Amino acid sequence: MDATKFIIKHGSNVDNVQILLGDGVKKEYTPAQGGAGGSLSEWSVPEGQYIEQVEYRSGDRLDSITFITNTGLKSPSFGGGGGSYHLETFPEGYRIVGFYGRSGDRVDQVGFILAKTIYPAYVASPKPLDIKVNLLTE
Image (tube, rainbow, N blue to C red):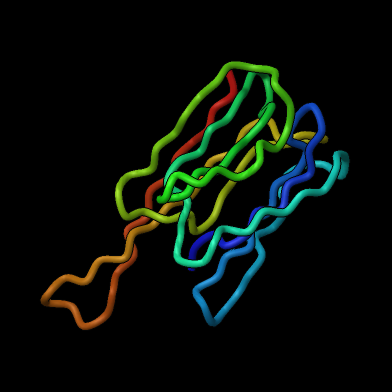
């Protein structure tokens, strides 16, 4: 399963993040991270695409976040224009399979759990390889 939809509450900062994970058959929402403030926005990853990069702005919290697919399509920017600009590129073939963070009323820090399914010749079933990517505040 990988990220198919992002549910973000935002204003001048990112207030809350939740992800819908899916594999074409099963769908599952991650627990939400953050507070109850902000305007609600949802963005679905287009069919056949996956998130390859994340642009974000941060200072002492996550000011904004934008998702970029493997075809270069960008989601809307969720949040405000404060903080410093950062771009995180995921390793080739890895997909978002979860996330974690630190928050109160707003998202202070978020990280993504990435996985890549490999098919070694000597194993009958695929094995996920997990890594974590932190989007750090300054």
